[in-house]
Length: 128
Image 1 (tube, rainbow, N blue to C red):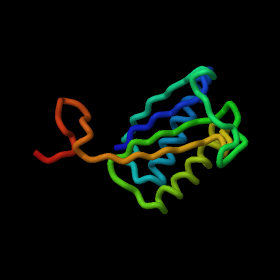
Image 2: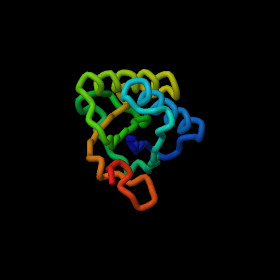
Image 3: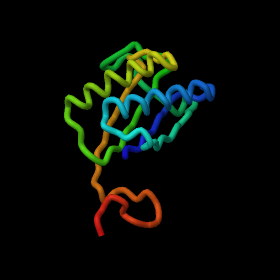
């Protein structure tokens, strides 16, 4: 049930965005214990003045293909699961659409079941 925010520089093609979306979803299903039909992604394409990043901090070099993947996940995952997810994610994104692993940054946040409403004005994950 995670929600994914993908931030990248403006100007990518629909095919590129589709490949990013599919690769992220594949990695979530394969390595982050997410059901295949649990797809909630928001894509933010930003101008260079709106997406600022250090091209060498803790990894790099980073290019204009830099992708920030922010995940809000309801249930915690183990360190091992997260490490495997990072590896699978960068492998998928390198294969399609061709994003170098140094250009992929991931931030994971966890929250509680009562923090989710999938619609209908209800706390979807909380028993009545």
